[in-house]
Length: 360
Image: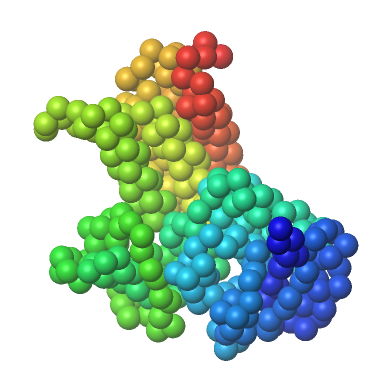
């Protein structure tokens, strides 16, 4: 039986970081050896010639950065778990790490023990079959976190298109085969299955032609996939009938609503942004109400929280819209809305896990 020791590949252009992790990680990782690379190009060369079980990489590096490396890994080593070290990581991002699938993010600088903990957890998820490949959505969220400007070439079979990011914001998209751009092109490209991606250093189109937040677009695509899976499992439904709505979709809506709120909260700079972020969350909550109304249990668990959230939406818009200089009132509105949205997400997630449970 082959008992090959497992390998962690650490990629960082900082000599001191590589030296510390190379010498410290083995004490926290039994049966793991540590290899290093100075940039994405060296890491790819290693991946082409030697087995690697977990990749730990910085994002900003010369020669080839972490995004190009992640694109290569997604295209050629889809089951390789990745731990990304980012100086831009916030508590909100770290708490939402499970939504990034096989990709994990740690704040840089951090301790070798924290990196080791994430390495072991990422490897265990893959071994158990819980994760497979780095989701496209995870890369897009990481791009937003790092405020990256570039174009992303997306291909799936004969389908091809570009997503354009300016300072981490999705500003435009173009689908070649359909000859469409803007929101419609973004929805089409984000919905493609089994895609390969390439990061293009230059930004081909920085004109803003997308007005739907990235999180909302990702939520719409995820919801459509949920409904398609449910429709297939239920025999497809009657011709012309709307897709079945599920408790899982309700949980996704609540979770995405909360994530969208916290992201907007960290970047809000104007009264219009406050209104837009609150309106986005209110829309997600309204959609959640429609979903939960399909089952008695869902309604019993979530309806009170939804009603409370709707009231907080109105209060939040009033407070947030008085004057952008009134930072204290705006902050209070964020906290109130966030608290309600988080309670709502927990209720919906509990319902998804056990639809037959009695309302709390």
